[in-house]
Image (cartoon, rainbow, N blue to C red):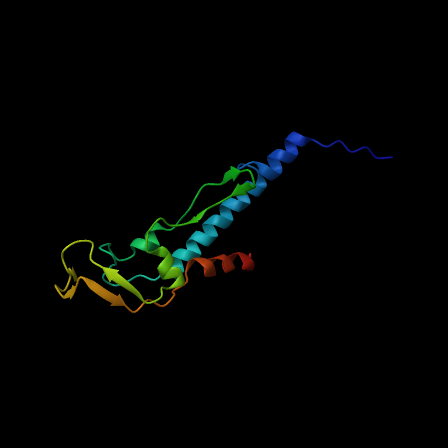
Length: 137
């Protein structure tokens, strides 16, 4: 007859510790997704929203491994406010001036008026496709 002794502390370290093998693997996978998203992220030649070219791409990061009530996690993403419309696209919408002045293009000096009908943008997925990089591992 065999006797099995369960070591709860060791099981906790192996499966739920940021420094354990599962945590280290999750860290590696987060970096894989980060690199894939940066590789796919569109970069405008002249920048966007007053930011330099590559601002969105350069803002993509993978967090350190964290732990919450659900278990270990890694966040991969960005805090740039226009990241979601780049990833998913946007529907046609109205852009209105925030004051008693017209909207204008600061680079060209073109004046549009206080209200503009924006045609929307086509989706340029970069983050969701980066998750597919994990399938090849």
